[in-house]
Length: 257
Image (tube, rainbow, N blue to C red; front, side):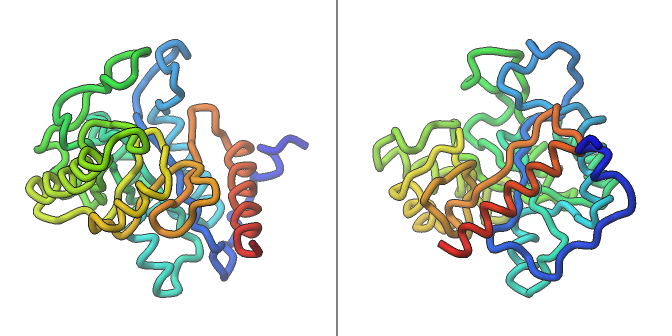
């Protein structure tokens, strides 16, 4: 029996207790493409793939929500059945392609944006197509649609490789810019490239962020080094189930560390 077949069928009720570490999924761009060469970094999923992935979550009794909503629910003991959804970089296609799918499945998400590159493109990716980033008006439209806006820094720099003054500018400067744009200071930060160390996590905490997302933070833990699971175009039901189980095992190991 294939993994896809094994996970098909009736919805599975979520466990009554949430894992120690919440399951947070990481997306980037949602756009149509047919040639893998158009997506050399594996950051694009089609609207159809996102629709199927969110449908898989719902079929298992899970619902995707923003990280802020997830953290608040867990703090109140209502986190069972919730999964964090994040979209990095703030691509303009979020409004046209991702948001309709989120609404279809009654989900919300956190969009991590770059207020230092408003209306620009993914200049930090040397390969692949140029992808437009949201303008200030686009960011406001996402916030007005009920999605959480978080900071991804100003310019998409590896924060572990910059001096303290630049680190402060990326953290505090981006937070201030987003407060000017949306009227609300962001709760969350996302480390560009997922790279992080203790100096950077402490700086994120000192800058006023309630939480910060990485990818695989290693021995770092806590709300300012939250791990996430990268989701790609290839992640159909079987692969999603494997990634869910892998997260659960890592979370259990952390609980007994």
